[in-house]
Amino acid sequence: MGPLSGVKVVELAGIGPAPFACMMLAEMGAEVLRIERPGGGLAMGPPELELLNRGRRNVALNLKNPDAIETVLQLVAGADVLIEGFRPGVAERLGLGPDDCHAVNPKLVYGRMTGWGQDGPLAQSAGHDIDYLALSGALHLIGRAGGPPQVPANLLGDFGGGSLYLVVGILAALLEARGSGRGQVVDAAIVDGAAHLTTIVHGAMAGGSWKPERGTNLLDTGAPFYDVYETSDGEFMAVGAIEPQFYDELIRLLEIETPDRYDQANWPGLHELLTKTFAQRTQAEWTEVFDGTDACVSPVLRPTADHSHLVARGTFIEQDGVRQPAPAPRFSRTPSRLDRPPARAGQHTREALADWGVTGIDALLDSGAAVQAD
Image (cartoon, rainbow, N blue to C red):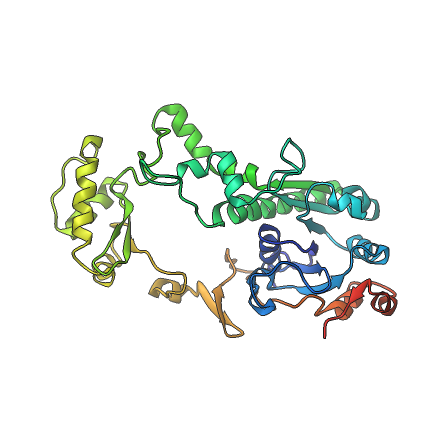
């Protein structure tokens, strides 16, 4: 099952982007073993609702105990990948840094997930998604003219600039290791990924087609044909009619006449016209007007909503009574899987360690180096 079937991953539990990356690898078929502190770590709810932890078994180890460190190294010896999200230097102090792990497994791909990276003046500083977006310039781009930057939840930094770059880096390093027989460290920093995501804007700014002022450009709500508009019931419609043929369809279906959209002097008036027009009907009414057309207009739905297109594709599924996104992307021959709900810390300690060939499990449990949850 899955294109990564046979790949074994040791996850040193963290929060946010590293667990999301491990979730993706597990859904693509990798066997991911999550190593968590006894009792678990920071949680946003009950363990069964920590959806970023789905798809893998959970082993509780006290990494302050030398026997637990030796256990992790036993796991690493049979793994293809290790992923950690500690501050720089913490894994080394535990005895689980890249040198320690490569000593027992030279082919290991060692994935590191941080906000600021492994080096640089801020490497040891605390931070969150919003900080990495701010420093990279990505946060400045988001918002309306004359207004402050808008915070895109933690989706753009943690999961876009963080998790996805870690996954890409790990897959590339795995592919390279097949030929070279040597592992390497993948340094995935959210600030680097967030900056990399702005590549198109840097090119446009250099060419003069993107102004530094927020909310004045084609894709940042500066253009009236790429914006969101409130409907009569307080909901919103998203308009992305960039190309001429799509814009013509938009205007035809709105049943209005507009000034030349290419003259930016007309943009304020066009914004006002579209605002008044969309305010005349409900979201459901406008959805019916635009559904299946090439006007590039869509309802802005809540995360809990089900659109017919999403239902047809199975974009969201229900597992164990919880609605959640289905694995992505999709594979034609080796489909992704979602076979395990989120686990409690230590739920699979005994069985998973045994399956991975760890010896002396009873002694580990008796000493508290490992914990089996009830």
